[in-house]
Image (tube, rainbow, N blue to C red; front, side):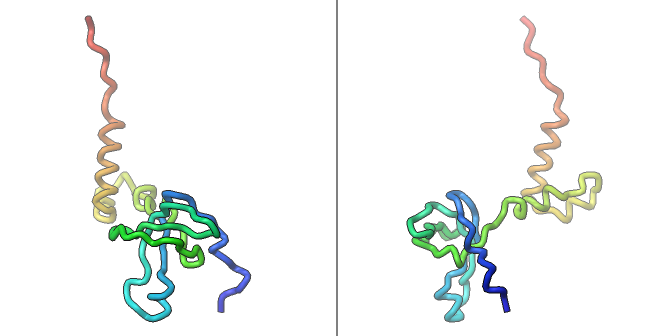
Length: 119
């Protein structure tokens, strides 16, 4: 059993953060699709939040933070941050978005600075 003194919802969330939200009614009644990623759109009174579920976009008003968990940016960027850049086989382990970003960064970093036109 969990320690009742732990309270992850003591966290406060800020507008623009991404959270995992569990719809308590769907969860407690055993319905499917009860947990999904949302963006915090507004901090409301009485420690509740307005959320936008991704990708549906149908707003959730006055969400209880007891059913929310922060999705840190570091977790979303983990594959890029830990990618071994010296191996051709590393590309197979990365998402397409990560590869595109790394390719863009590599091209930008290796581009020689342009000199201004002479007059």
